[in-house]
Length: 108
Image 1 (tube, one colour):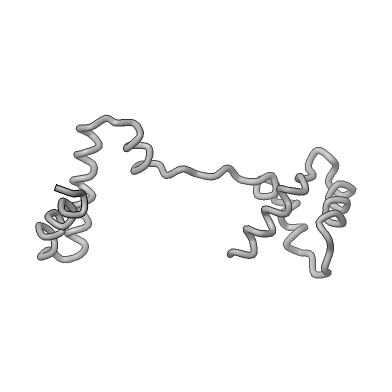
Image 2: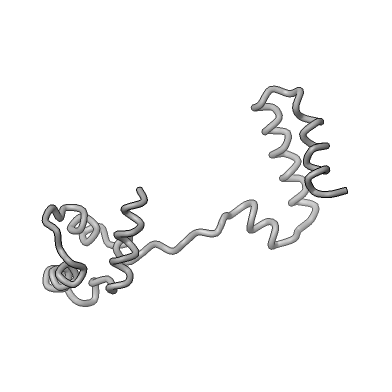
């Protein structure tokens, strides 16, 4: 039996329940499966989704606030020079990191 067919059988079992009860039943069943299986790969996928590390900008609220407050168009090089002079070289993000952060912000 395919996974799709098995999923359909499970759906048939819970489709008569109200949505919240069906979801609760599926959640409890998932917990029991994980408890029984002890397969670390499945547990990490279901319990703790992979998190992406926070960028240097996200970790430094002053730099983030500075970038968000910019109203005039600037190049990445100009922004990096300004960050370096205001906050120091050790707190200045990389050129790639700043470009990635801007791309991420455009998606919000």
